[in-house]
Length: 296
Image (tube, rainbow, N blue to C red; front, top):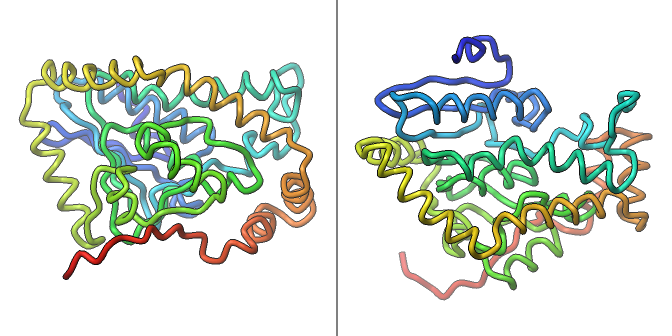
C-alpha cells in the first residue's frame, strides 16, 4: 500500500507523529480539482484511514490557494469531446446525475472515514474547493481567506451540501442566491467553519490542533466522529447529498441567459473570459455581515 503516493504529480502525502499531511499539489491551477487529483485524493484519504500510524489527516493546498474549485477545462466543465460509449456531462439529465454521483462519491468518502480530517484553508476555497473543505470534520481558515460558491451565478448548485447544516437556511440562501463569498473571519463567526486565525498563524494553529487530536486512541476518535455523523444522518445528510447533486445537474442543463452566455463565452473565448463575464456586476463578491462593534 502507498507506493503510488511517491509517484503522484498532483498530491503530496507524508506521515509524522500520527498526522497524515495530504496536500493538493496543482499550484499553477490553484489546485483545481481534476479527475486525477480527485482520484489521488481519495486514495490518500483511504491510505491514511487504513494506516496504524495515523490518527488524523490534515488537508491543505500548495501555493496561493487551498482549492479554486472543479477544473472547468475537464469533463465537469463539459470541455472536450466525450468518450464514445460512456456517459457524458454533456449528455442527458440522467447522464449528468450519473457522472455527478461518481464524482461526489470520490471525496464524500471523508464523511465515512473512521479518522478525522482537518481542512486548513488559505487563499480561497471556491465551488468544489468549498465542497471539499466543508466535507471535512473541521475547517480552520486564515482570517483573510475566502470561501463560497461563485459558480451559483451561472454554473450550477453545490453538488456536495453542508451549507444548510452549518449556516442555517437564511445565510445559506444569502450566499447561494448570489454566489457571494465569506472571508474566513466571517465564516467562523457564522459557524460555516470552526475557526479563523491570522494568516501567519494558520500553519502553527493547524499543527497544534492535529497534534492534540493525535494524542487520542484511534478507536475513541472514530467513536466521537461517528456519533456526530450519525446525528447528521438522522438530519438527512446522506439524502441531502443525493438531492444536491441532482439540482446541480439541473443547473448544468439550464438554458437561461446567464448559463447560456457562460457556455458560449467558454467555447469562444475560454474559461477565464467566461468567469470574468459571469462575475461582472457583483463587485468584489464578498458578503459582509453587519456585526455589532466588538472592540479591539
